[in-house]
Image (cartoon, rainbow, N blue to C red; front, side, top):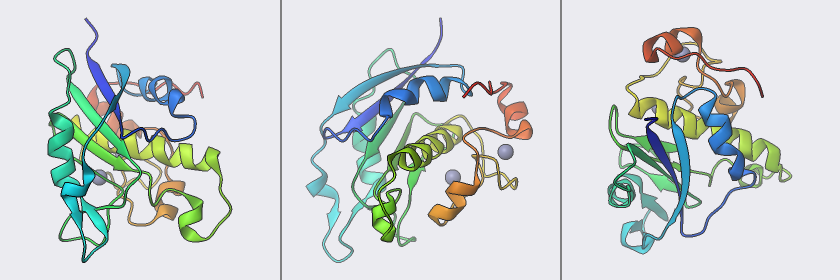
Length: 181
Ligand SMILES: [Zn+2]
Ligand SMILES: [Zn+2]
């Protein structure tokens, strides 16, 4: 039986082209991907002084929504998320764990004062989801700057990466990424 990962859209936030995520992720990860929509009261995790939402707390709520036939769940939100030691994060994952979260807030061109580009937004979202799921599968950050497991501080770092794992990371997972995009 193929194992299942749930892609959980928070509070009806469906990023452009998100229906492509399952197919694109399954090129690299030998899982079945299912979509669910979940509601989480994000106000509980809002920090007034930072005007941001605490990622780790949201992630723990996301985990409560993991269906029993699922091995992992990744939440996708449009709010700006943080952990206390960083000014912001694109996403967070439990290393070799069940859960992860990605925010599209800082993946939009609009955030940087540039014209909207839904294609680019999708590519960034795909890369960040693949990156965080890689962590849940035990992958750590990779030194290859084109590898999706390379760490990204700025959105430009994300754009330099490919939406795929390098050969070394594929070896660690024991998988082969298909190049059919
Ligand atoms: Zn990372
Ligand atoms: Zn790598």
